[in-house]
Length: 95
Image (cartoon, rainbow, N blue to C red):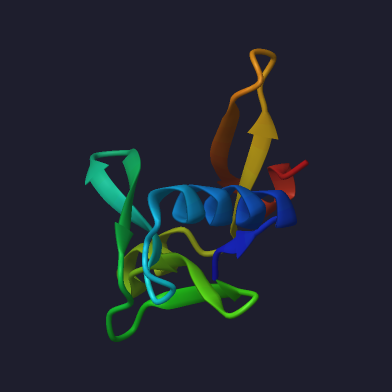
């Protein structure tokens, strides 16, 4: 299972609110290429790991990617320039 920190959930909610995505859609973690992850706004599919916050879908990942990333933590970090960066790391390395 992939875990999200509170700051990651807050950042994903902010993205979804800004994009005016429907409440049943969330940010999907997708494989874009070998070793490269990406994000897309999408609705849930059968077998997805779904994270909800305050009645809203915020994060989706399909079962095969969730299995490959079992134990990973999605976090959001504030950068020096004021922007935010989502990171995916293994649980033992999470800050």
